[in-house]
Image (tube, rainbow, N blue to C red):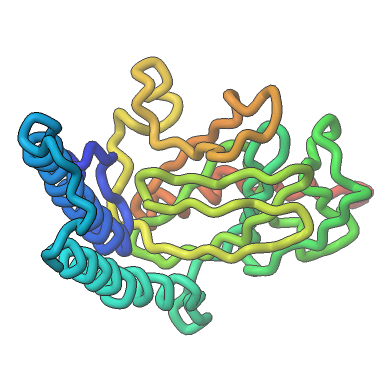
Length: 270
């Protein structure tokens, strides 16, 4: 399916449903293109001036075109009711806590994606716009006084996910409208200032080793996080990297990224 439509490989659980609907729409457009194109050529030949020296003001007497239009409308209704609506209904249902989804915050800014993982306590640390500073290494404005944020992990342009586990991403923006796009996961959603939009999906396909950052950079074959909305002069460089790995490798990455505890201090025993 992906090769036929020229799509990237599908790495999410919901992707086949979207790809199938996309294929049906393309087939409908192909039939309409060939059908109406053939009809256009037919009318040019059938009603040319040489064959019809005298104008006919009664018009077409057949109702074939009306039945064709009804058929197209019914097929479009089938796509809407049979595919689009069920997919949408499932999309808006965020996985409940019982399914143990991985919750992540992603905040777009000109021109980077800031990714925020809760620490081992599973609670996001408190943030404040007044504390946000890229220069000071705190792009999300994490409050250092909040104990829940002491074990949080913040990454820039790096999104790591475990395969087979539902993921909920709380998407927002610090400045202008961005569009969070994961082509291999069939996910695209606008990041809107002042709003937090939850999106969810389940990755099922591991990122091939040759497509993992930074090894893929030279070959330009990375699984990227793209910004699909023109967001400023530096829009072209707003690119992140997605890595879907095994749960064990994901946990190892989290452990490697976790803040190191401060060394204990105190007076030597005497």
